[in-house]
Image 1 (cartoon, rainbow, N blue to C red):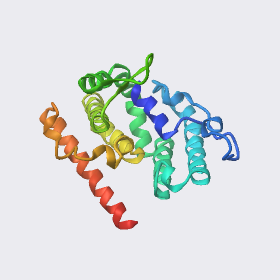
Image 2: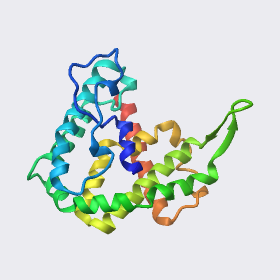
Image 3: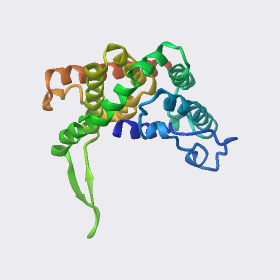
Length: 233
């Protein structure tokens, strides 16, 4: 499931191995857990994965803050690390509002992510924009324009939210929406230079009205965040 493997962009997949050593890469200190490879069907299995999830979130936070320069960190504001941890903490805390959603919708999440066509729809959207580049006599690579990549991530997120809403209901939609907000997966895929000119040229893309409306909303949201950051700094 591509949605789960994308969490590796957040470096969220580990148990805290001990004191952070900046001379070692994070993945040698923050070890993999099963939760981000597949969503379990049983609540017992989900809860068993929670200690590793929370430990890893702390591990990555400590690594980023201790070892990376400000412009290399996943989040520029330290409180965002705290917000992310608090989200996973609430999801894992038995009896919390988010945990209750997981408890009642876990099998639905499992079935939805196992059967979704969102990744294939994303690939179908990207294919016309993919260009083959000859690197040397023997090697080629395939390149996708940055803003097309950004737009494809937004469309995949919308597809996932739509599938979750249709299959699992509004409470599940609110949970997945909060997940996207706290992890900033869309923002991570769409830095400002990827978005340059995209809002103005949105009509050039073959989108449904619903997709177009979602993309415009996300682009405007990120534009506001950019402006706030400029004022702050």
